[in-house]
Image 1 (cartoon, rainbow, N blue to C red):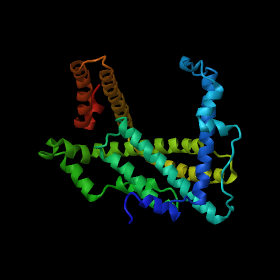
Image 2 (cartoon, rainbow, N blue to C red; image 1 turned 45 degrees about the vertical axis):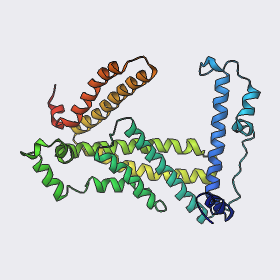
Image 3 (tube, rainbow, N blue to C red; image 1 turned 90 degrees about the vertical axis):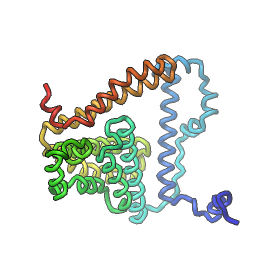
Image 4 (spheres, rainbow, N blue to C red; image 1 turned 180 degrees about the vertical axis):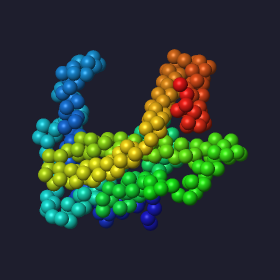
Length: 312
């Protein structure tokens, strides 16, 4: 009888859960890099570089016994399988690293959403996240997440529906509907492009740093693969920068100011909640402090974009 309880054992017995040699190779590099990071943190804390007095009396030998990564970091042993370096292996490795790269980008987008920089209700949040899903489906070819974003933003020129709706929301009674204006006004469409290009470039820069940071680049093949993916990423970022450079400066300024304002306001609300949880603020006090930030966020959402540009 095969059910939820026995299925995992059966899959292991049939070796259907076994990682491929290429995946094992990548995971080995990750484990080795994490062991090095653990050793660096261990030494920094023992030497007091971080100034944390809680660890002044810690025993080097006891901590090493407690943390498995520290026991093997000195040897820095590699458990990489002996995989023949051929085109098939390299192709599979490139595809696997591409998927990791895209997952790092996706995680960065979610960070921006959680920090309030790109609220999840904005269309650009869906555009950014779906671009990663689309790119993952063709990860064996090349990084192409900007292509998906460009298509969603109609970079080849506004579609008929977008032109028509931009015109309609400028007239009564459609201009009274804030949600319609927020999605379809010409100003909102411009700001959306700045959001997308800015967040895209930030996520790719983050992934370019994180990939070698977590998976290392000591092995020649891994280094070649990572450099190939980073080069693809740079080509994609060049297209995003080209869009950003072509945008009217006032909308670039507005969109990036809006993102910063959202982050500051979201951080204020988060700190109020934190102080409430610590018992430093009462519920009534927290509600009063949070009200101003909530009202400011609503103004950002509801006021026409041009109203910020015309204000002194």
